[in-house]
Image (cartoon, rainbow, N blue to C red; front, side, top):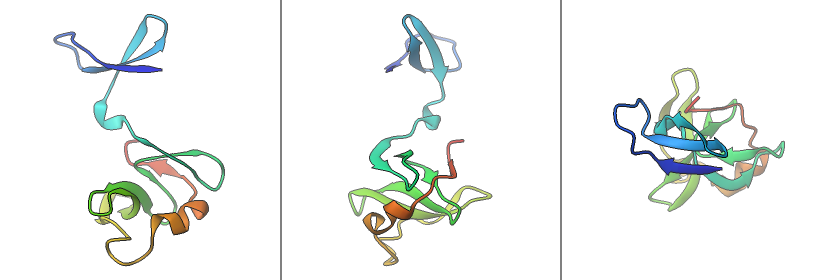
Length: 107
C-alpha cells in the first residue's frame, strides 16, 4: 500500500492512498493511525488511538518518548489522563499483553 500527498486542487482530500494499481482514493488525514509494532491479547495489530473497554487508549507521550496508555472517556472520546506513566499509574509495557482493542478514536 502506498500513501502519497496529493496535488489536485479543489478536492476534499489532500492525502491519497493507492488501493490498486493506478487506483487511488482520498482519505482524511486525521483518520490515519500509526502502527506501534505491538499486538493486543487477541493478536490484532495495535495502532495509535486504539482503546479498550476500560478506556485505556494508546497515545504517543512526548515526555516518555514512546507509546503509552492514556485514559479515555469512551462515550465522548476525550482524553482525561494524558499519560498513565507520567501520572504514576502504570507503564504501557506492563499492560499491553492484557490490552483488547474495542475501537479507535478516529472511527
